[in-house]
Image (cartoon, rainbow, N blue to C red):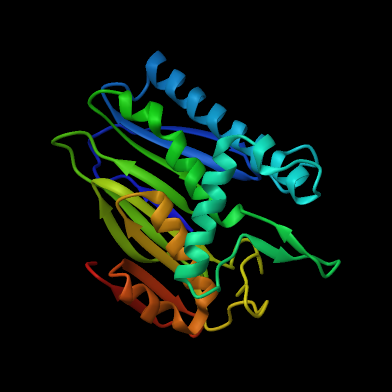
Length: 260
């Protein structure tokens, strides 16, 4: 999981925490509107966005559009347009990963079920930061389940993002400075075998975690998840996409692609 680290000791950082989509969501703000009514309104709007996403996409809610679509009770036409957008992203990464990533999983009943969770988290957080971008002279770092979007105020120092060691959560394997961009980490340490190679159903065993740094969270999150599913082929696949990434192997080795 990625963890935000304050980049300075002199700039106060205000932190907000809530819980949605089955995971903790945290916000760090520093600058002009770090602790005022505008910040609180932006935080409330960000959380409202995530709750709306959960109502549409949650596979744990029987009344969500995705659950009803999976059961055949409704069609895509009856779903919000965002569902088609998410499924299109999933199909794109299915093709680009050679089928290792997919928005369908085989359930305990042996049937394939719709599960766009691998797309939704990063996509949702990328949408949730929109009100935060309107806070003038204020930097932010919004984090949810190992994925984060960061923006430093003009003229301020970057956020420093610590990449958690999947073998020891109390340690970091790298620290990445981020002015404006996204960091996404996929691994099995916290949520168990929730990612598999869709072609084989096999849980990754060679790779412990994959962290990708990119301009936007949608690409970072999807690439990190697909690379983890690709397991031993994670590094070569990410290198072909010219990604900045940190890959931690199950045996403890670390490989850094692009700039550290």
